[in-house]
Image 1: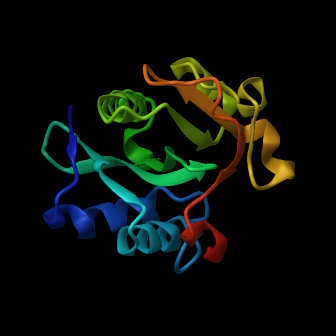
Image 2: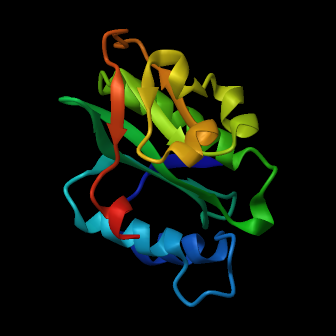
Length: 171
């Protein structure tokens, strides 16, 4: 397994992976694909935190994409998309991608990483409910899924509402 930054040569494979790993494979254009495409076109995608996982044969089997959101005036990475091809799940690719994204965000001196996702999965990486930190998401109905992982540059005074990048409002 190799985790590395996404390159322009990976775009078609990552898009195909996003379609293949979506929860609604019967859709022509899953929401995850539309979000991924919109984030790639905008200024909020964090290239240093757009990662791919390669299998033993060099094929891309996983992808993580982070984008900048904000809490007040503080920019905060959001683990916007995480996908692993169905044939490669439960083999450590998703875990390796999350660890790599957290390490890269820490190296960028980000105070935290936010995610909207399964607490059982993300809790293994130290993510906790956002309300533990005085942070709320934009959608109250998703509060139980909105989580924070603090990093070395964390400052407890960063509190308030997390605002997702603009493409989240369109998808």
